[in-house]
Image (tube, rainbow, N blue to C red; front, side):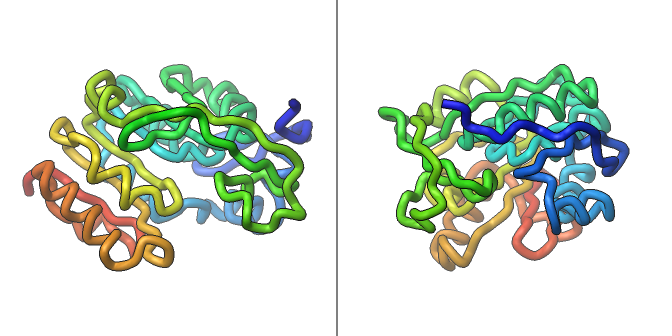
Amino acid sequence: MNVETPPARGFIRSRGMRVPRHPGITTGRIRAALRAETFERKECEAVMRVVQQGDRVLELGGGIGYVSTLIATQRQARRLVSYEANPALIPHIRRMHAANDAERIELRNALLTPEGGAPLPFYLRKNILSSSLDGTVDPGAITGTVEVARQAIGPVLEEVRPEVLICDIEGGEAELLPAGDWSSLRAAVIELHPQWIGQSGVQAVFDAMQGAGLSYFPRASHGKVVTFRRGW
């Protein structure tokens, strides 16, 4: 099954990067935000504060490839492993990486979970960015279903040994982060989704980071984007 709309030609310049135009992604507010360099602004500012040259970085939630490209091109991470569950975004992310010569990124189309397991159904929608694991939301817009591999967080952390975590997984943070051994981290940038995980979920994220020896870093935190780092 073809899971993406054919891309349009050309690029949008944003933060010194080339973002490929795409009729199903770079539309409306996203296009304007890219040009104004406000797209993922809070996350980008936090990432630029904590990622250092030569870091091993694990990104959970690759999005359109914007943050991973920023890290690869402007922070020269030694290794950057990026997980994105939405298969329709993978071709666009690869084009963005290629357009910016971001060669050190390992892009993986899979969903990380505490225990792993069988693949899960992923529901594709007309609006690519609205595709999700939830088939009950706007069922009339669903254009197809594909299976997404599921991987256990433990073996991935043993393999990558990340020094920096970047996490934006639309509410999955409350279940996933407490299940991992994050002792290798020096810093983490996490977008919280309190509207879905509630106060208990937010507390679970903070407890997981504090359990790994990281402290809340307010100067690199902005609203729902919270940053943690080791030491002061």
